[in-house]
Length: 173
Image (cartoon, rainbow, N blue to C red; front, top):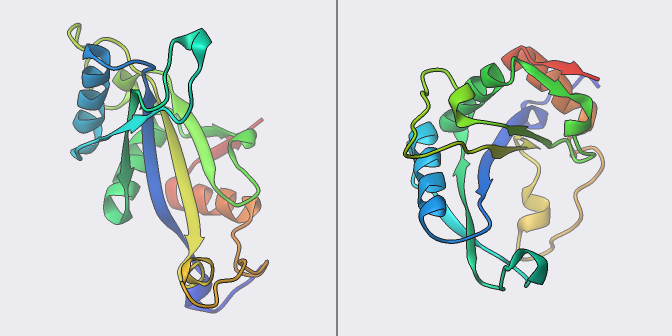
């Protein structure tokens, strides 16, 4: 779709990095340290939302760490993350709302990161949330909130095109 309105341009709303450890303690502290090394932001610890007896997880137990990046920090991190993935993302990484998700197996895949035996090996999930410059307030406003119209939503194809043009990413599969 050819759009001339600058408010309909697609932008990156946020990038969320998540490391799920499954338990509190030293391993969780190391995971938080990895996120801090990669992003220069302090991570937030995440808690479990329900009890899973098979994994020995109770509701409210701290089991992971995440960092949310926006604007310039998000774009800089994505450049590094796509380099770590070889500038390729599988087609199934995109959802119908135009967001993208992928995983990185090891933090040492990033340029300039070396293996530290004190930390160990940690992988992470990366979520890219897309939006249009002027549209998503409709669903978040207090008075008169509505569903987001089809014309404002970001499609899967538009996100793929955006990532190809902006970061030189190849969609495979």
